[in-house]
Length: 213
Ligand code: GRF
Image 1 (tube, rainbow, N blue to C red):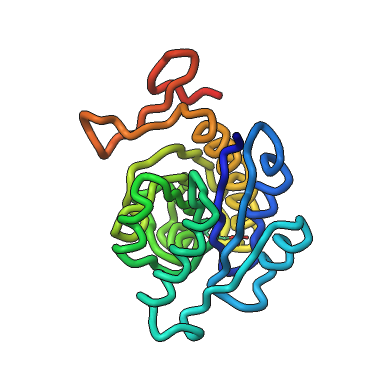
Image 2 (tube, rainbow, N blue to C red; image 1 turned 180 degrees about the horizontal axis):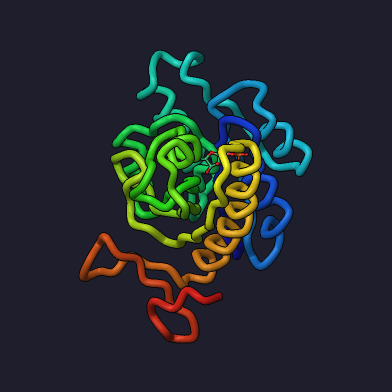
């Protein structure tokens, strides 16, 4: 039985591509479906090229956001996935959606949360002048970029305001961290601490909290 993933996207889909190239169809992991919030997103092309079932759920094609989120949730549920990965999905999902898949949605975010939540994280970090930034994989709750943290990786910034170069470096880090998180999740090594729901336990070789792999 494979560990089935739904990936939600809106744009370029480089994180989707990283998952296709590293974990899809390997190690018992399968990307079962890709849902896009936008027509014509490059991510849709990437999914189609990889032969992954793909559909567009644009809010404008529905009577509103709640109706779109409900249709998307039903479509995902029909694919019987174990995990939903938000990989550059640039819209908020409503509370009904989040509750339906509670504990089974993760997001990749291009900063060391809780610093710089929101859609302009890299620009905000550079504008603030931070010397260390990074990337975060976290569970999704009903608020923005706020759920329990699964993995983080830090990155030292040189003095530079070259946003394009910094974005490239941050994205490279994302493309490593997200597949790593998926391997850990698929192997059953990740769970919310039952005594402290803000904290995520990662077990490897029986050692809770060891994230060295
Ligand atoms: C990534 O930086 C991700 O962290 C953020 O949106 C961006 C998506 O990039 N949530 P891509 O579509 O995967 O190329």
